[in-house]
Image (cartoon, rainbow, N blue to C red; front, side, top):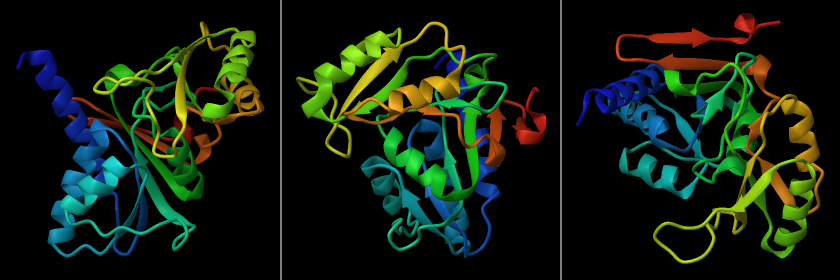
Length: 237
């Protein structure tokens, strides 16, 4: 493994471990999806073995399986509709704490869990902190409406691409049974407006733009040496 790969792993581990250490006794927590979150689960499993009592709401089958392997008790939003905090990763975070998420195709459940949480802890490495959002925006779409939705997305100024599976033929299917369309908008000048416009398209379930949680978001930016913590107080006017 080369130095850059080792540095990236160290950054993800540092951010994930710091987030896990912010979890307190008897908290109900949202458990996001992705490689950085798995480091948080790794550290949280150690704390559970040491006697910490928590319950987690997973945002994907993958996270649920990993949490069970680690001995982390699970619950649901039906049983716990209000969460103390949620821990998740992001594809990009801008200087206003707006996010693009959804590379793991779990964006709808991730947004539901973030909305239910009193605090939203986002863990990233330094490469994902950007001045302005520019990554492809994932959009979850019901299969019945895929063609008209893609036409509407084109009208918003993007190049929509139906996400294809890697180890299966055909499109990626979300845990909700839907398709994912990756949308390249260049540039994203007004993320809030774009999020609302996408949401209004009939057949869209949700998008990977997370602009409505900035006031309760804490971003932990990991690197090999230490973590930087950003909150709403650090938002650039």
